[in-house]
Image (cartoon, rainbow, N blue to C red):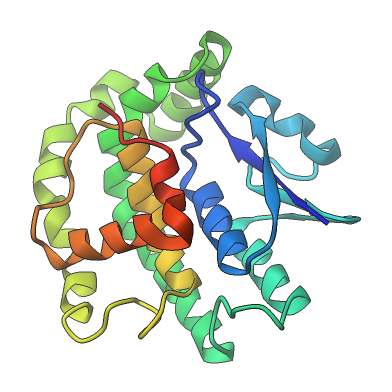
Length: 230
């Protein structure tokens, strides 16, 4: 049976960009599960699977509907134990929780500023209105005021990757000798900015850049099926 992944898109349905949906895309491929995307724009998310969640990703696997990228990964791990593991055991799942917290608190904070206006500009008009209103209410500033910090965030982004860079000196993946869901968590964040923004946040020859390129090559180049933003 094919899993349905409700995936976030902008005006161009060929450019899914949500970091959380990319985590699940990679997790499904890792498990070798056939899936198909159901495209959803911001203003249609409340209609997904009867309003089960305020956000995507959401998957439908037969009669099961699951929201939240981490809960989806945990569901896939439990439901398909005979397929390649996403966590490598209980300790790996706990580690992935830490990686998720670090990614959201450190990387998203910067990438959200860097890509903010470009995300707005890639949406359909009705979604642009929703995106502007919701983000400005959350941030207490206009999109343009937030974007004034863009160049400073780009300049300082490499330093935020120091823990990952140091770790990659001793192992090729966050998961160790092979990728796990922890890798897909960080990959999702960097794929988000790759797909939405012209900003160059990774440096040529850097260990993190090389790791990200390996991530793009995984699962028959799944990450490369959406070209980088121009």
